[in-house]
Image 1 (cartoon, rainbow, N blue to C red):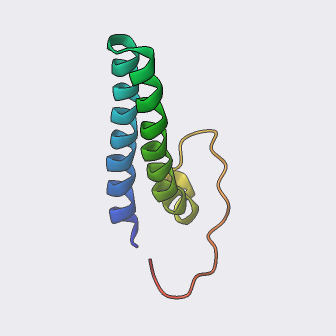
Image 2 (image 1 turned 135 degrees about the vertical axis):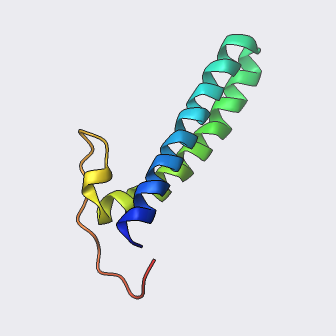
Length: 81
């Protein structure tokens, strides 16, 4: 994947992650404890999935990673992503 695509994906996925965080706060503020706990669990899975998409981008292009995030160097892979 080239840097231009990785940069755009980084922006979009970080935006999605922030929206998931915002949705958790909304449910926490306006819903029952039971609804919040369920929602937080499922939203956490979504956020984790987004993180799994971001990490390979940051491994390939460490300059895209947020400050303070340490990423491993790119792994040697068969084929292209």
